Image (spheres, one colour):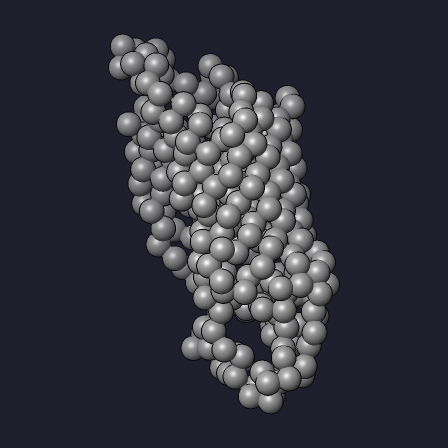
Length: 264
């Protein structure tokens, strides 16, 4: 889950806000100029809370620079997507690709339970995505491919959101799931004979399957013309190979991304 649902929640706001005039401040000369500009730029501080590693009992806080930058709804840097492009887009849908980053990693030093398993590093992933909004509902799918050679394989997510835009507010909530291939599950949840001998955990072979089921809540609020706050929280439950792994200490996963933006 981690940044997968987070990226989907950020993506849906591009569709859910649309051109709803109730979400915009009263028109001024400056606002008209900003609306006419091909650039939309918001930056500020943020933080990300996630399990120390997949299946961990404890959470970890990551400071995270919050960026929401786009050019003509074509190129963007948003949330965990460092750089992305909407290859096809309209007011209601987006199809594209991005270079995405998440915090899925595992360090032996994180927990004595991990002794003998070795580290798993995080790194960039290629994200292919599509989303479509019909009235108050947005469907979003994405495929993530590890491109850093850290054994995190391929994952895919599917989410459905119901959104409620109010003056100055946007609320979205909905269910989703994450699928993972055998490379991913073996790296993060499997135990090889060598790791078993070093750690004392039983050998555990994995395969492809559903990684988790989750529910995501997203809210954003315009405090003023320039200041915007947002929070994205996902509560999930590990499934199948991830749930049955001897590495997993807690099936429930909680991730939260919160940010305060200054909108130029």
